[in-house]
Amino acid sequence: MSGARTTNRSFVAETIAIGSELLVGGRSDSNSLFIAELLGTLGIEVRFKSVVGDDQADIVQVLKTAASRAGVVVMTGGLGPTVDDCTREAVAKATGRRLARRKEALDGMTARLAQWGRELKKGQLRQAMIPSRAVVIPNLVGSAPGFLVAWKGATLVSLPGVPREMEAMMTQSVLPLLAAHRAQSKLMSPSPIIRQVFHTWGLPEADVDAKLQGLIPKGTPIDLGLLASPMGVLVSLTTKPSGKKMVKADLLQPLAEQVRSRLSEWLFAEGRESMEEVVGRLLAAQKLTVAVAESCTGGLIGHRLTQVPGSSAYVDRGAICYSNQSKIDMLGVPVDLIAQHGAVSQEVAASMAKGIRERAGVSVGLSVTGIAGPGGATETKPVGLVYIGLDGGPGEAVTKECRFHGDRQVIKQRSSQASMDLLRRWLLKRIGA
Image 1 (cartoon, rainbow, N blue to C red):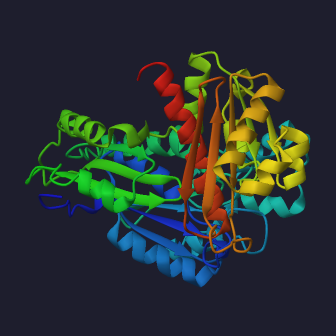
Image 2: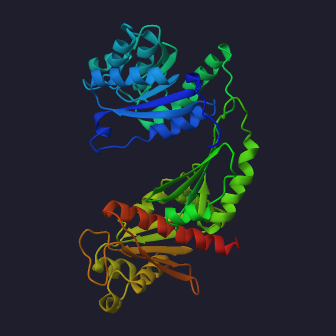
Image 3: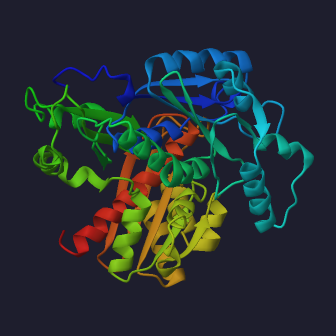
């Protein structure tokens, strides 16, 4: 990025993810990305991110460090009813505030539990303990309330770690509170931070980078970011406050058009839209139905497609045909075809797609067969070899060979993404897009 970054602490934020499970491989923190995007609309830049376990002393230390360098600190996690949930106590100790049971917090919890047909248990009473002079943040999705504390020039926000609860509380309560505080304090940010996201599939990160070389003109206060994952390469354009100058939103648009043009066929979605949402939208628009036959992905494609609301309009059925016999019995794959080419082959993938389409009576059949590993490979068929089949009727059959790397889970994820991308491309071709 060109230009000096803001040194005004009021426009700097830090996220703190709390929970020992985040440090030992059980879970990863996804909340910080949502928080950063939302705070950016107020011109607040997340410059730091911390992860800390369920230890009160450690949380206190991390919190003090965060408050010394950021004007907004958003903590997620550690607000549950169990003994290892100690965020409330850590905030009270760090700020020197007394914890006390707050009526509005208790009433909100009681009402939410009643909606679920449950009664408040004794252990849950500690969730209504809030630091003195804090603003209670209601939780309209879950039971644990959050809170906001002003301390030493910083605003400390504590929210549950459950993403859907955190997202609702950030959007409905925290953002309006922060905006109101800034208006009262006459804190005017140079400009909101605008982030535009593009999702690609089918190109390695190095190739995406090469296609975008020279995209950002020198001196333009915009960051270009690339992030590779099993679901493809995410490309982001982010405007940043540069001193006291305004960064105009329309500065982003010609660059976004360049991204679309340079990545063209590999760009499958923008913003928060997923591959399954794109495929679902295309199927629904063309009034087509799909059935899926899965071997190595074990139902992952069907799961992803049916995660989209309204998917019953276009998803007919899915078959997990893991063994050779199941492919023969359920899909009508000829015994001789498997004997001659093997279950992991272009020919069997094509037969699986045709079989599921004919048996389901749908517009298009989609299949996948491969070696997810770590075992099952041969000299000619390594781990990561995957074949995808698509059958849309006579003259509408497509197969694709893929060679993926990674562990079993990653290969399954990539296989599901590649399968849906093949379907996406076929659907686009049908409408001449």
